[in-house]
Amino acid sequence: MEAIAALIAQAGVDGRRLRTVLALLGDGRWWTLADLVRESATSRRTVEALLREVGLERSGDRFRLREPLIGLAGAAVAPADPVAHLLPGHADLVARMEELVAKAPRGRQALDHVAATADTVVRRALLLDARFWLEGARLLCVGDHDLTSLATAMLHPGVEVTVVDIDERILAYIAGQADRLGLNVRTRWADLRLGLPASAQSWADLAVTDPPYTPEGIGLFAARAVEGLRDRERGRILLAYGASERTPALALKVQHALSQLNLVNEAIYPDFNRYFGAEAIGSAADLYILRPTTKTWPAVAARVDGFGAAIYTHGPQSVESTGSPVPAPAATGQAPEAPEVLVGEWPRDLLAKTPRTRLTTWLAKPYASDPGRVAIAVPAGLEAALPRLLLATRAQRVQVTLAGPPKDLPADLLSPVYGLTADGSTVHAVRLPPPTTDEGRILRRILDNAHGKLANTWREALIKVRGELTKKQARAVITAVAPWADDVTVLELPAHRLQELPAAVRGSLTAPDAAGSPG
Image (cartoon, rainbow, N blue to C red; front, side, top):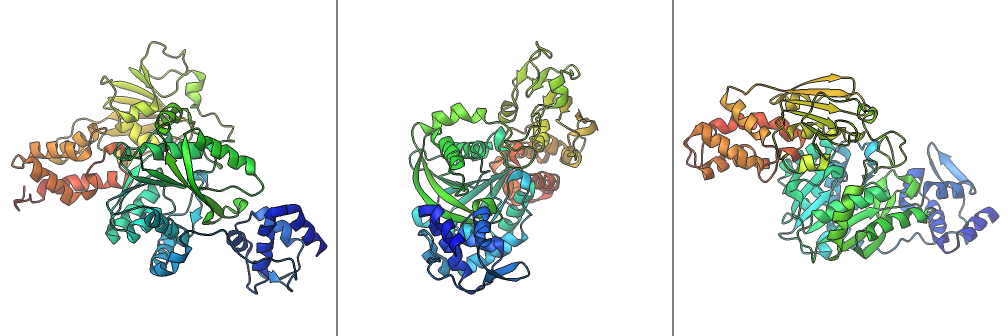
């Protein structure tokens, strides 16, 4: 008892956390450590320190107090939740989200994935609906491993939702569930370090993000969320961020990163988000409601290109990683094969007279000329961008230098355009001859214009092949065979849509037009 009392006294006003843990332990239920951490929103280290001082009855990995601790436990209360009173009325939605979360792809530690609970994503949707007018509004999910997009679309079908994410599995899963449930959710591939997809820029009224919990990750994801807002006066960003009660200095760094973007904290709801995992921060995170100011957009423009590849807390892309972000051959000055343009970070004294461009610029817009040979340097952590970096040019030969040997070559994905081979850390892409079939010609034209809107390029190519179609009829055919093709570029298509593209093009050759006439 004395040791417990000393711990509580040492915690001072934050002793409420310890008293809450004791109250939960004493309510007669059996607990696992993970459940106790999540329910109390207290870091694992703090909970473990308390458990060492109390008498526990154990059953496997579960435990409870042997006897009540009179006078030490407090009421198991939490800060007011703005929408908790609404949750009982949406039990069906919580149950559906529990099923969707359970079936979703497993999180990747290297991407700082930690699954939020089903009631957390439903409460996010309820808060959006309670605080803002969602009918006709647009919501941008900047990363969505938690499936907030699906919860919001199910709660309020009148909202349009766009998800941008680097994880192809998540994009395929969300798109598949949205199609199955008839939800207005579209998906876009993006590595936010290389930019926000064109179709998501200045698109949204609201943005929601649960980014990597580093100052670099928070700053980058918040900046991209700002770039996604079309309503510069009334747009809002909902951002999840959590830190252990033991490390306020980390939270200060994150809040400084947000203040550098000149964002106003309209509200912070403590411990609003709960997770399966992240026990170091109590399996909980606060929810920030941020509002841009007139000074936000200049701040974003000035800072967004300064974020490096290391934005995560784990893995080779973590902020503490000691690995070189520059591909080894590029760092040592090994020259590529007579390129007409160098893309990415190459040594300054290497082919000094050869034109250069940045990776972000390469993906953002077509290169000014039409080079025949290109050399691209891809830093560690950006390998997922390889297919898009190759589709961004019509060069006959592309040499890509990676930080290490590629795990998988996207040969199938790029087979309509390139033949790929790998030599150690170097990938060689050789452009294939022009196709001879109608399907091949349409597909190649689409992929050759990867920066342009897919539906527009497809429409013109389809009219040229089928002849009898008007622009309106051709667009209707495309919408019928590929409803996901509207207002998207090839560079932002998720991999599963790129894989579906050849079959969709084939279907557009024989699909009837609006008048019912087949080609």
